[in-house]
Amino acid sequence: MLSMITLNVNGLHDHRKWMEFWHFIPRVDILCLQEIHLVPAQLYAFQLHVQGYDWYYSLGSSNSAGVCIGIKCTLGVMVCKVGDIPGHMVSLDITGGVNFWIINIYALNNAKEQYDFFCKMSDFVNDNTILLGDFNSVVHSSDHLSGNTDATSTLLQDIIISKGLEEIEGPHRNVFTYHPSVASRKSRLDQIYVSFGHQSLRGYSTYFPGSDHYLVSVFQLPDNSMGPKPWHFPSDLLENESFCQQVALICENFDNTHSLHSWETVKLKFQLMAQQYTHFKIKQARREISSLKLMLTKINTKIYAGENLEFDRLEIEQ
Image (cartoon, rainbow, N blue to C red; front, side, top):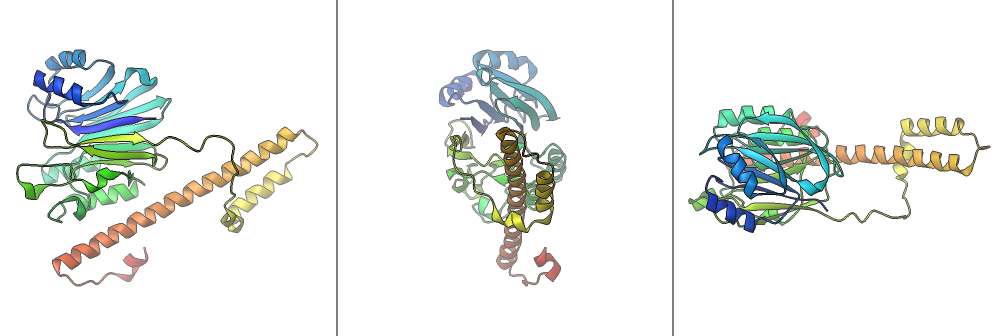
């Protein structure tokens, strides 16, 4: 069962904080940290203290930015660093026992720089991605105590929809993860978005001493799909002309003089075709749901601002 955490540590240059960090953090498979505030001269000492992980960095300065990902050595995977935005993003391609791209971000604060950052970040998102970190921006108005959104909220919503991402389920969705000294600025800046196929991940928020951000733990639910069981054919496929033509072609080429193994191979082809179609329909439905949520957010924003609720008919139909 895969486990990981994402946390804005608000600086790791203090050795006393290393001790606190390592005693507080469980020995999870993947550690994604933001605002580490480490420079090259401090890396060796930190890695020596936090043993058992291979570390991949994108460094900032000794008092700002910096992100890193730690992969537990015993996880038994191959790792390739595929992306880097200095001090603010590191992206890894992980293959082996688990297979996905993971992108750890610490978004910039300035609205213009943040907009450019998110545009660059989106280029690294593929259809097998786990995107997490400190976004420094809310995605929806419900993510901020005041009910407001940020300058880049709409851009983030567009990226999430266009890339087929969705937020993982879990209790963390109901907790503000950023707790500054000004209570009215509480918000949920630390988030996890995943591509289709990673919905078994669940998130939990926990107070972390020494930081104004909560730690978000991510755990993969156990796979209960293993073992033999009936397979339910999606009957709406019978109305899909392309699928029926493919089935007819396979049946025409089937030689029933061969062994039972040949027939089992044909059945497996049918099942794989049906699963691919079902996955496509699910992704399509999730995009439509995300679009409707975006429309609802726009409506709520207009209501909150007292604006006229007039939408273009084409926009609503889309």
